[in-house]
Amino acid sequence: MLKTRSIAIFITLFVFIFTYLHATPLPCEKAVAIFEYLVGEVTFEQGGENITNFNGEFKQGFDENAPDKYFINIGGVYQGTFADYNITIDPPGAGPWKATLPGNLSSLDVSSKNGVAFMVFKENNVLELALIWPSAC
Image 1 (tube, rainbow, N blue to C red):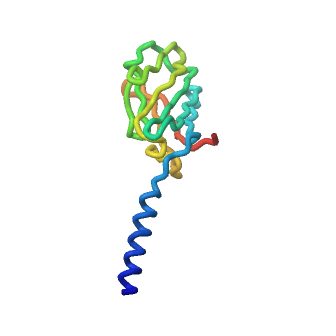
Image 2: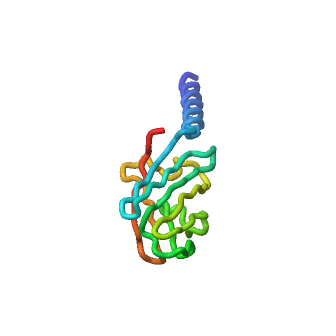
Image 3: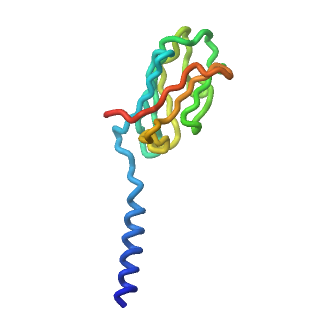
């Protein structure tokens, strides 16, 4: 009887812990990627339970006003053209812009020891790769 009760308590605790282990991110959860060659910064903020806002600006590195020729890749999860994210280009810079991504910031796993890659391409050429790191609120 004691063994059965102990197992039942253990299972109940196990279910309770793993049900509440996935906490909703704090509203001020932030991450940032700093670009040296493109002279810019991209900031990610939790916008809601399933929305991540990101905004940024690049001051150099763009030689033509063609948003469909420039691409971003965020951690291999989100990728698209500048036009997809409504990022304007005014050579030599791009932006400022504000856009949203589906999912929460923790889905990018920015707290990993290696950071998360944010790459900017022009056609098939990488312009710059920066790592996304957690930032203070």
